[in-house]
Length: 165
Image (cartoon, rainbow, N blue to C red):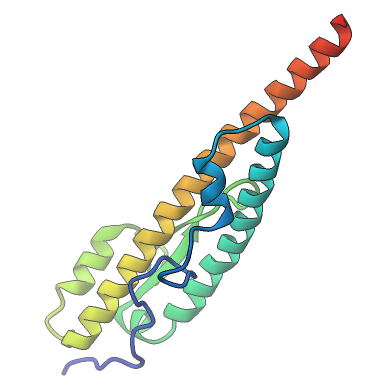
């Protein structure tokens, strides 16, 4: 007996939580222009930290949206993974018992013979959403890590200059 799809897919080909066709976010524009000093780095860090906080909530929202219904029927979960204190978590596939993790779980679900074509498409859409979210999380985490290293170095340079003047 084939499992039927509960709800239509919510993914429409745009980045997670973003409307398609819109202009780049302020943080993206900030990455593309030259820095003019410590102030512009601090401003970019603050914008990225705000984006990171929004993405933490988005990860929770994605879990709540998809873990009940289709994924529950397949014995799959999508969970955020990683510490929350200084980075955006990544979304990972988990089994219901939380003993296994990884893409092999998703591939196994896609290979099921009792999966209807609409359900396969929805499962594919969830995987694309997960990959896009993780790519964005990686960019933000990387840039925040760099900024959190550079800003204290610049502040130390300011202190050294102030002592020598």
